[in-house]
Image (cartoon, rainbow over all chains, first blue to last red; front, side):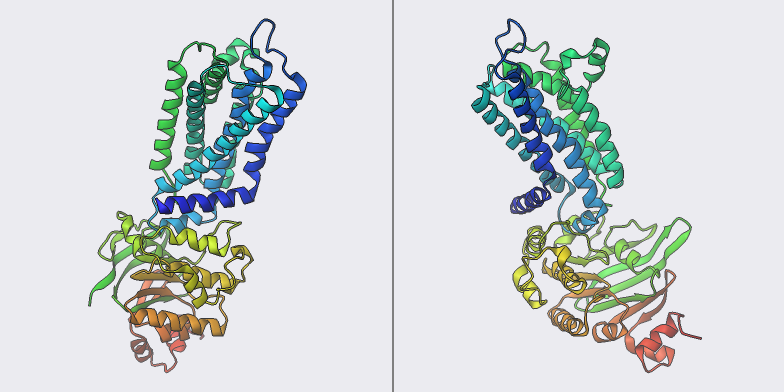
Length: 247
Length: 238
């Protein structure tokens, strides 16, 4: 446990010193929030609905940092450590791959948590955004989205041969999910065929679930998103630990 | 005396290149073993096969009676300095030491070790800003942090100045006298002569000499150990 905490503290320090994730996972979503806030203010999402456009977008805004941390940060840092032979050095110490991955995983969970808190605070102070549904439901759907997305990234980083292939895998995962899962383009605005395709992204399921929980709407189906996200989490983290490559 | 490292008939090929060809070696507790040979003779591959970082194609290995590929607990008692040392780009000396020490149950005091190796005033510096010799000494410090029973040092003093080399020898001799087993590779024959109880010379992956420094001199008929090494490893100038 002491080893875990010391590693977490040091690796977090190094990660913040690097600044990439501070920009992409903390500042970027906040900037998007402020732009949306300035554009839409407190106007309702549509005629006759009881919630504002910003409130409707909170799920999607939260997913920007989840995307950045899980699909960019996590796979790249793991692959970089492999390429720089840092993992080779860890290999001849008593640490297990599981613990090493867990430390990196938790760092990105912390980033998304900081981002979430800032988004909630700033949107509340600036435009009176407040959660209309259940806190528990929202927290749970947020956590599921974080776990499933990060485990995809952990698997990609765990098995990529080098930084280059990790960054290709990261791009292939990051951009489609960021653009098509509803994080930037509203899911409702997509043609129906496209909606069907992007539904398989765990991110899409996560955003829909977070949105219904935030707004207090009844979700179409609870089982499907939960099953998709839990399945992805278990499968990907299992593969990441099992197929972990030190070199 | 108890054998700490046992490797029998180690064989490893990269494609068609036979990097290590049926090498066997045994290292007793509290002794220093030197693996010698030209660049590309297979020294690092032997170390990596012994540590389980590379899977040998044939042969058996045990370190402290454990199989390094199966039992990671072994690494509580083993220190390693690889020829190429990886470190995080923005990490400081103190952070790297702390992060390494925390992995072991009973680590040594990294501040004292740093002082011992002349790095006492460098702990706040980024590792990438150290000089080559300082970085080399830092990685020797890291390999001794676990307070290991056996330490592997690949190209121990490459990049160190004369004084620093002597200091490192002195520290290693003291540790050896208190029971540490040392496995090293080196290109400096004065160092090998000063530290090693037994040596093995590799030539293209095969062991061409195995014994003590005195044996090597006797067998080659050379007074000077470096001459003996060159003769035995087949690299003597014609």
